[in-house]
Amino acid sequence: MQGPTRTIQIGVLVFEGADELDVVGAFEPVAKAARCAEHQPRLAPPRLFGPTSDVTCSNGLRLGPVEPSSASASCDALVVPGGAGARDAMACEDLTSAVRDTYLRGGPVYSVCSGSFLLAAAGVLDGHHVAVHRAKTAQLRQLCGPGVTVSSAGLVEDGQLTSAGGEGAGVKALAIGFSIIRRFAPSCLECISARMEVRMI
Image 1 (cartoon, rainbow, N blue to C red):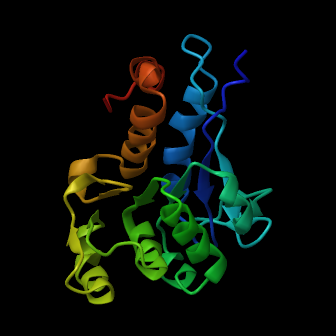
Image 2 (cartoon, rainbow, N blue to C red; image 1 turned 180 degrees about the vertical axis):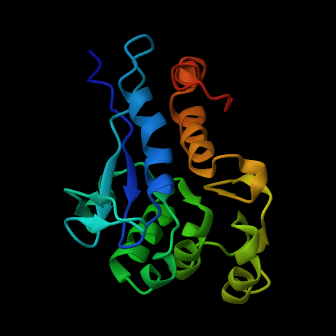
């Protein structure tokens, strides 16, 4: 007799000054897929993790309750948003440890725009291609060194790391959200795209 099928848990890291659209744009399509009655994917609703129990995003939206960053160890994949606070968040060991630990145990890590700066601080970019906002490519290259390809190429899927930056990604966070669905709940791509009236497949 088989045991119950394990569900896939997606975590979204949040921090002071995270961009609202980066957080919610990735969160919403995954949350809709998790509740898809038609296809019933093995996907749990996404959860928020961060260094404090609530955060204020870059344009004033308050998010909470937020689970401790360390609790993201229960997640199969992690989303890292960008935003005005991303550079300051690089110094937060709770956040960079969560990214590093997910990557080292083989979990996919997704970054939206300047969320890639946290991936750099976590030391997981070496040998990878990562996308970021076109105005921030030079800054990220300085942080990463020659072993990392930095571009504003849109959506870049490179092994464990998926990143979105530059105009080619459309709404970057939505591109990340649908990339997660494509990996973990592909049967939901068409229906979630139709429900949200976006063409991301």
